[in-house]
Image (cartoon, rainbow, N blue to C red):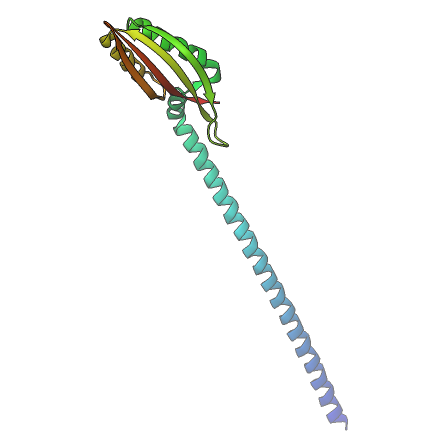
Length: 173
């Protein structure tokens, strides 16, 4: 019995060591899997943040490289502060074209919801020779603003032409 109890003890000891080794193997495997999952999540977060930073740098670069173009676009629109100056410019164009201009009305028009671009509608009358009225229209068309001629009417009265115009000018709020 001495020999068999020694063998049983060795077998039990070996079984316990094997179970302990198996338990350690399972625990280490679980730790590796958990760590791998955490690393994958962190890599995903890093990739997302890297992409966000690249997009931000790209947007900043776009803003820097288009600054001159955006400034040029801004000059095509009147602002609330420059509406009076624009009206004075229209009147001075009448003087340049040798016609009499009368501003009938100036109205602000709302733009699209959420947009900072609206418009100003200007109604005016002009009296002068046909050549001078056409010259006035040409001067309006050459203005460095976004100007749409919505209505233009011409009526001859003797040697003079009476004309009325409705203009829409782009405005940045």
